[in-house]
Amino acid sequence: MSTPETGSVLLVNPNTNRATTEMMRALAARSFLGSGLGVDGVTAAAGPSMLLDPAALKESERHVRDAVLRALDAADRRYLAVIVAAIGDPGRSRLDEELDLPVVGIGQAAIRAAGRAGRRFGMATSTPQLVDSLTALVAEHGMSEGFTGVRLTESEPLVLAADPERQFAELAAAVDRCTEADDADAVIIAGGPLSETARRIAEARTCEIVEPIPSAAGLVLQELHLVEA
Image (cartoon, rainbow, N blue to C red; front, side, top):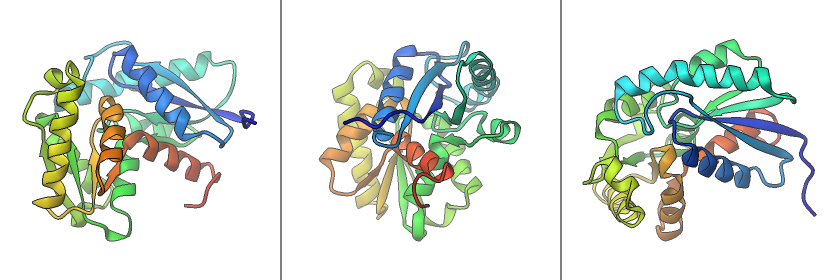
């Protein structure tokens, strides 16, 4: 018997790719199974289909805010939390200050999960121009001491987005460099659009793979006091 829904979470995709929104929404919904929480997805109305550099990440902040406020105003029900579903968490801090509900970023949640108890952790991703932004996000959450750095795929993100098998192989190789060369105990697959590949890698690797969307769902449950922190 399924658990009846007792509330909803709004997931916002800072990219303009609606297929990515639905993929991440569905993954979040699976992560909330049994909690009574449903998930609605909303897509940024403007900006790039993939956030590849700091300028695009910065620009997306206003689009994220607009999308969330518009969705909250138009909703026929009250949302209990918001998930910002891009690894750089664009707009999360401002929304968290403005809204009277938890606003969780998938980067924030993944970093907390990966670095708990002082554990060594790294990131594997396909976006070389965001390395400094991701490193700064780790510092923002006080986890720099255990951070082993970012390992990158060989191919560009748009190339990998068009070839899921190549994306899987190159990200898995980056994960191996995190664990073997950098001695990381856990590895974040850093990117919302990489969520399906993150799940595949988690099933194929013995090290702990930290998936940003499920991590964000877990942090939402903690913020809503539905599970223990």
